[in-house]
Image 1 (cartoon, rainbow, N blue to C red):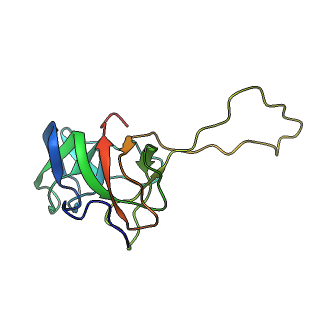
Image 2: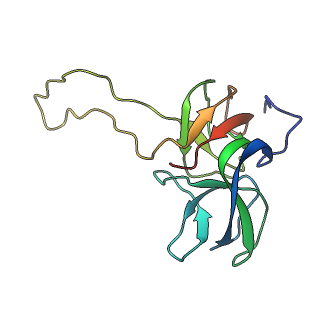
Length: 151
């Protein structure tokens, strides 16, 4: 595994930004991408297709308070190859990485003629939640992200 920012820990709040406190619906690991959960002021870990609203800044058990980065710079672990400057989104994390993110794919612009119901373009689920400041070569690589929390 490569690490473009070995001087920082995964899930570390770097520089300026905004942090909010929530209650964890289930156990969270520092660096997990989280989403707003069903209960007021609560969060849970994201899976593929979810809107990532923050990054857990502390490892906590269920029902504990967790500081969540909703805007700012942090270090995450990639869920695959990511190019510097790419928008990122949440995917289901695997055993090999603490946080999984992947580059967002965009649909080509322009008109597309469809002559068959089987000819559908590939559409990605999920919404971009930040910008990769570094490249990551493979699953589990550490890289810096400017997280926007709007996801």
